[in-house]
Length: 102
Image (cartoon, rainbow, N blue to C red; front, side, top):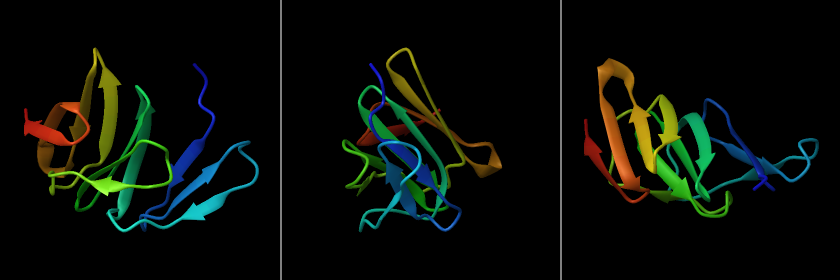
């Protein structure tokens, strides 16, 4: 499966998307936190930032999760999302909506 929507995030939490990698559209969304990282896997985008984690099923509309700690890195493997944060914390989930501390 190829990704048909590229998604980037800047340090102030602004998400932009592009279908071709050349023309970008700025997206604003109510559930989003200031951003540090964004990742795509298993038909879900996750974005982490200073105040937690948000997810999107389309890369355009974002929803905050129940995680409110800083997230600085994201990865997906073996049907599990992994989020790491400043201060050495780590979290995992098999659902983009619920997280548990590692």
